[in-house]
Amino acid sequence: MGGPRLLLLLPTRTYRTEDFVDAAHRLGVDLVCASERPSTLESLSPDTLLTLDFSDPAAAAARAVEWSADRPLAAVVGVDDVTAPAAAAIAERLGLRASAPAAVTAARDKFQMRQCLAAAGVPVPRFRRIALEEAPLRAARGVEYPCVLKPLALSASRGVIRANTADQFVAAFERIRALLQRDDVSVSGDAARFLLAEEYVPGLEIALEGLLSGGALHTLALFDKPDPLEGPFFEETIYVTPSRLPAAIQESIRTTTAAACAALGLTEGPVHAELRLNDDGPWVLEVAARSIGGLCSRTLRFGTGMTLEEIILRHALDWPIATLERERQAAGVMMIPIPRAGRLEGVRGLDDAKAVPLIEDVVVSAHVGQTLVPLPEGFQYLGFVFARGAAPADVEDALRIAHARLRFDIR
Amino acid sequence: MTEGSDLKTRVQELIDTMINPAVAGHGGYVELIDVQDNRVYLQMGGGCQGCGAADVTLKSGIERLIKEELPEVAEVLDTTDHSSGTNPYYTAGKS
Image (cartoon, rainbow over all chains, first blue to last red; front, side):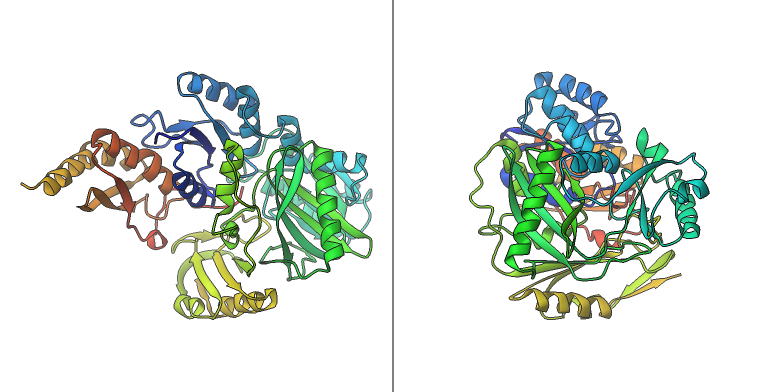
């Protein structure tokens, strides 16, 4: 309390709440939290709690402008894909630091994003948008195999399915159509009416975490994803930084990501890019106008211990940032996948997993009694394993050993 | 009555009259564990334990309310074992 007022857009189901709220408190800002559903305490604390419709950025911006008339805001930050467009719309209305809403919206829609990137000559897989009302068998005849089908606006590989044949295409199409009608999926507009079919690009997958400032991309971390992602589903597991790729290839990944950001018109704030790498060079799969998801940001420390969230908030506030240099140590995270559907009855081996050398922490984020849904319909993890050490290979080994010691009782 | 125990009584009163009736709407409750050196130690239970929005409830709701009513409170600290929550109101996931 007492510092500049900062509005955080926090969906009720995001993993990102704790890390952003902690960062805001460390910075001493006057924190206001907005969610898509009212907090039970909103009526008692209307100066710090707010409800905004993230699915309608214009309406969210109008409400935020009205709310801030006698409570001036110094910054607004959306913590994920869902909130980024609303944050950009609010920032534009209030003259705060952020990318333009059109750029953020384009990055949120996989079809628009590929159109922008392809038009700018950024390497992307060949793609086609297909209406969900179309007969899948007919659509299956118009694509080359292998291909990948995906919803336009979901994250975390949700609904992303590889098809090697027309029969697999039809099955994947029907599965995505059913997924988009689930109660726990909230998409509207084109995202509810179309899917994307694109060429399957073989190769290694990497992720770049960056910060845009005045249109310049600063690479905060480059993550290798050592587990092969070849389908039929694309479950993300291990991220390790720094990358073990040769320096020249890392530079080409940075250059390609910067070109992608420029093509989209993104100029300010965090970006999370996913690329494939093969003999033809880097291919951009995604550039999202947000930071890394889940609890994965806990792998990152900058300078003398600054977190990624502190950097993002400082940037939004236009405060000085001592350094954007990540620490020298290697670090990694394993997102613990859900192996099968069922109810989580218990977790064993937690202490054994935590005892593995280089393991910093093991966080089980699913709760006992929780109904677990694996990919491609699911959108949650069992938890996260974190490791830090001298070399990326040691960190990767530690993550695998710790994961092998965990036992999830699912019935 | 000492100054510390008086503050504890006033925090408890706030929890009973304002905070718990509100969080009960999501099946949650807040328990006062202690007040030491003007620091308030709480535990969250029911729908609040393990809830994805628990930090928002605590920092932007409960702490603000307590500090507004009792400005001598320096900090409100959550001692909850959120990993043991079995019925959180919101469970986290990726968007």
